[in-house]
Length: 190
Length: 190
DNA sequence: GTCTATACGTAGATAGAC
DNA sequence: GTCTATCTACGTATAGAC
Image 1 (cartoon, helix red, strand yellow):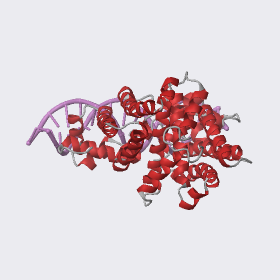
Image 2 (cartoon, rainbow over the protein chains, first blue to last red):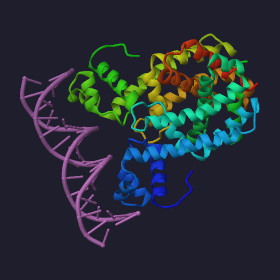
Image 3 (cartoon, rainbow over the protein chains, first blue to last red):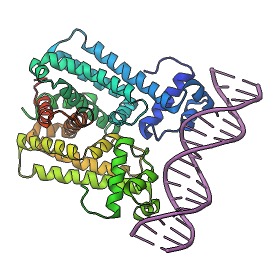
C-alpha cells in the first residue's frame, strides 16, 4: 500500500513496521518519530493522536484488502472465484506481512478507539469471501452460514500464511499455497 | 484451566480476563491487582515481574491445550482423529475464549520476553494436528507440508470460533462446527 | 504472605520558535 | 509544516510495615 511520498507516508510506514512486531500498544510515538526521521511534533501535526494515526493505518490497509479481493473475484464464479480469492489473499499477506500480523492481533479486540472502523473493514473483506461461498454453494447461503465459512477459510489462509512468513520463510510459496488448498479441498476430511 | 484457589489463581484469572480484551501490553498491574482483589505488592510477591506473570499464564493455558488435544486424539486414527481434534479445539476455544483471543494476538509476535516459551507451546499444539495429518495422509508427510496444513486447519477453527464467540455469540454451536467441517471437507473447493 | 506508600522512568500530548 | 523543549500522568517495580 505504501505509495505516495511525504511526511504522512513516512509516518504510516514507520508505524506499521514497528507495530507489526511490537503491537500497537507496544509502539511508542517516540519510536515512530525516530524511524520515520521526523520530530514527534510532526506526528501530532499530521495525526491528531496516536489512536487516529493507527486508525488511519488500519483503514488504509484493510480497506485496500477489500478492494484487492473484489478485483480478484471480478468475473469469476464458483470454485474458480474461491481459488482466486485464496491465492490473492496469500499474495497480499506475503507482500504485507506487517499488516497481516497487525490484523491477526487486533481483529478480535473490542476495546479500541477505532473498533467500529476495523469491524466494518473486516466485515467488508469477509463479505467478499462470503458472497463467493454463497454463490458457489446455495445450500450454505440458505443455512446462513456463509459468513462462518468465510471466517474459516480466511483464518486458514491467514494462519498458514503467517506461519510461513514468520517461522518458516525459506519454504517455497507454492508449497504453502498447495497445503492451504489441500486442507480446504477435503484432502484431509473427505 | 482455572482450578486451584488462592492468591496466585486469583491473579492469573484476573490477568487473563483483562488481557483478553485489552491485550497484555494494555493491561496494567494496577488493573490486575484491583480485579483480583489483592494489593499490587502481592502481584510482585507471587510473580517476579509482569513478564513472568504472563509467561506463567500462557504456559498454563497453552500447555493444557496440548494435553487436551493429545487426549482427544488418543486411540483414534485417520479422518476420525482429525474430526475429534477439531471438535475438541472448538470446545476449548469456547470454554477459554479469553485465552484463545490472547493466543491469536500473541502468536506471531517475535519481540516478547516469553517468546521461546510460547513458541514451544504453540509448536507442541500444532504438532498434534500435524501428526494426525501425517498419519491420515502419508503423501503429505512425505512432502513435509503436514505442519503447514496443521496451521491451516488450526487457523480455520480459531478464526471461525472467535468470530462466533466475539461477534455472533447467539449462533448455535453446531452451526459453527458444521461450517468449519464443511469448509475443511472440500464442500467449497472439491 | 499481604498490605501501603513511594521512587523512577517513560509515554502521550502540547507550546511556541523557526 | 516541522522542529525542540516541556508538562503531566501513568506504569513498573521496590521498600518496609504488619
